[in-house]
Amino acid sequence: MKRYSSRIIVLLIATLAVFLTACASTVPQTEPIPGTWVDVQVDGDSAKVPLTMVEQHRNLHFDIEYEGSSLAFMAYILDDRIQVRANACPPCRSRGFTLDGNVLDCDACHTLFDARDGTGIEGACVDYPKAAVHYRMTAGNIVMSLADLVDAHNETLIPG
Image (cartoon, rainbow, N blue to C red):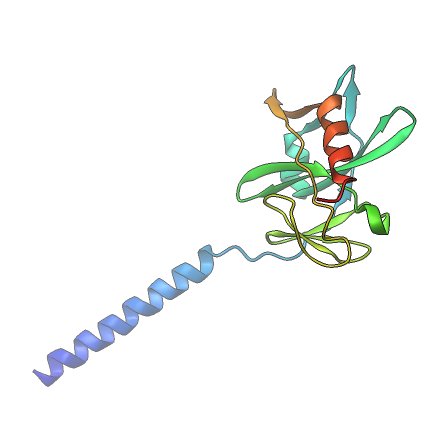
């Protein structure tokens, strides 16, 4: 009986070890992902970014010229979903965020924003959430209307 109990304990420990090893190997190891600035194609009233570029870099930053101004945006992958947001931190006048897990970290002032919905978490510029840009997927491209880009940029400039 004692021998039987010992075997069960050894078997349970071995099973637990295999389970923990399998779990550890499926947990993604994430490091902060700085933004990679790229040029995007603007055609008429829309802009497009190849999905493969976002998949490759995981955190893209790009500018759109609009009525003499340069408006910054970011496209990143979070939870297997593409997010496109305005890329501006108005009080510190920064453009550029590092994606750190589920958090956007301003490259200048280090204010933190929730990467899922753009809301501020903590820091000096927390009252300026990063507005989402509506997009559609067409022929392997993330396509955004200039109107939606401008709206998201303008919304990010307003505290809220």
